[in-house]
Amino acid sequence: MDIGIIIVCVTIAVYILIVLRQKQNQKKDRKWVYILAGLAVAMSILVSFNASLNFIIELLNNTFGRFSRMVVNI
Amino acid sequence: MKRKISQLQLTFLIANLILSSSVISLPQVLVQLGEQNVWLVPIVDFVILLLIILILFRKKEASIENLFSIGRKHNILEKFFIGIFIVMVVFALLRDLRATVDFIAAVLLPSTPLDVLVVLAVLAVVYVTMSGLEVVLRVNNIYFVFLALIVLALPLLLINEINLQNLQPLPGLHNVVDISRGVFISFPWMGEIVFSFVILSYVNPSKDVRKAILAGTGLGILLFFITLTTAIAVVGTKLISEEVYPIFVLIQQINLTDFLDRLDLVIVIIWVPIMFTKFAFLLYCIHHSFSFLRKDETVHLILPISFVIGLISILIFNNNMDLLSFSMFSWASFGLLLEILLFLLFFIVKKTRKSQEKK
Image 1 (cartoon, rainbow over the protein chains, first blue to last red):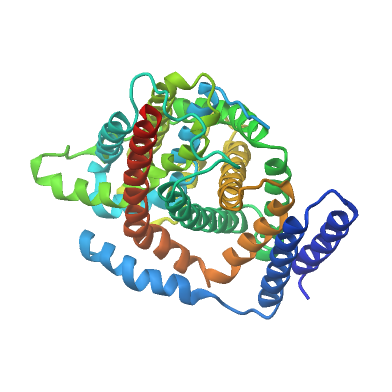
Image 2 (cartoon, rainbow over the protein chains, first blue to last red):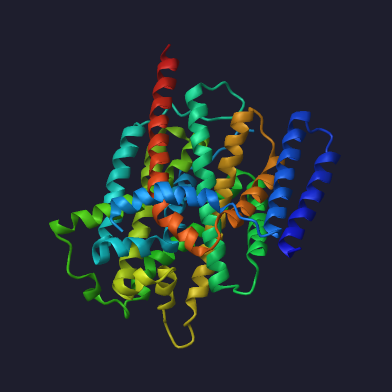
């Protein structure tokens, strides 16, 4: 596992512990904390497996990018 | 908590939004399109932005009170504005974060893994953002003054290297098409002043917001104009259109004496915090918009949001070519579309608020 991913996971773990210990947080806030922390961990796993989300950029490059190239004639 | 920011802070923030990321690789594509005449592009951009600002803001602005503030009741148009705003800020943050990290990896830390650079950058940015908007803008004020002074002094520092023949032949009417193409590519970068619209209600006093926005836009575009023109005069169009980081090549040419020949590192050390301040502000914008939609504010969500965005910036761009293609071409039409929508929605939101206040 890459060092960057280890830093992400450790930071997220410490962050969740801190949020859990602060009892003044509302239930609604905690729900979002868990969702976003889970998303961050999922993203770090994707990075450690060298996965790619390049399809988003490819989609933009094939639509908006192609239109821009057509406008500037490159 | 009621935040208060001064007009000077807003001015420097807008100038930062215009200058900091556009100096990375925008000059390359502009010179490819318009060659030595491209120095006219920032001037045309300024005229267009001037018209937009004059239309959007009145001389004594009073209708921005509580605009996009958290916890109040808002109409569907404001929510729609914030929805589009989130999309634009997220893509701008992804683009700028990856561009800065790639630059650091290429120039300063070639053997450090990309994910480590991203994670460390994110942690630094989170620390600033969690301190609040005022802190972000104060940090921006400190560093932007230094950067502005350096950019203003660039022509003087490079006076030995300037070759005015690089700026010739001068533009004529037959160059209108080249300049228009440059404006099409560069306008979405200059139009990033729209990011400052969500914090306008915090400006104190609010009546002279228009003056601050105009000053910030003017300053940012002036500094970009100086950088671009000096780069063309010193480096030349051939080298700029080949280089990924042409402005870095420009500042490498500064050679004051025999022992002061690495001023490029000093300038990069000042530019990097400016970039980080921009990230902190964009992160604040995402958090603010998210809180606006949830009608509740908490600083707890900043850390996971920033990690998610940082990691997506690694996943979304396979390599530097992907990033350059997105920044140079996709952003031109994608960013322009979003900006036009945001300017229009902002205008309508202000008009509807004004008519509601009259009732």
